[in-house]
Length: 163
Image 1 (cartoon, rainbow, N blue to C red):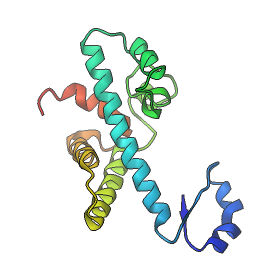
Image 2: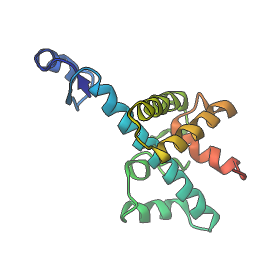
Image 3: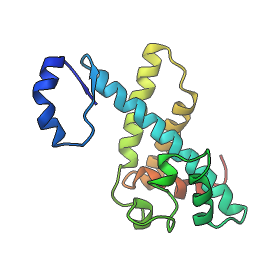
Image 4: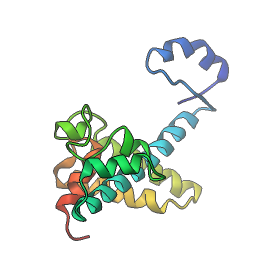
């Protein structure tokens, strides 16, 4: 997600392609960051929703692998459930399978949600779920999850019985 002068983007596009397979020109300076914080806000919201859903299903007696399979073939499917499931033992090769090590840190998610919150305030845009996600990730940082992957929200919610 790149913002800037379009001719300069075109000149740098091949080099940017070395950094990632998806390189998208977003417009003027700042629009790349805007796209990134919007994407990460949605990612945080969907991860929290996936974590809450999986936690509820497990507490209702569902096998987590079965619940994930059902979600991923149904209308609730999202990247957080089908590619980066936050429940340990559901998927291999994701941070939840490695005590939430690696991946995208909770501190970084809290930072991006803070940027989204600031942007929403300056544009007078309501982000009710984004604000709640920001609060959750800030609480996680304060309670020892700052060095863990952001999908550790599942573990955080499992430990928090009172909100």
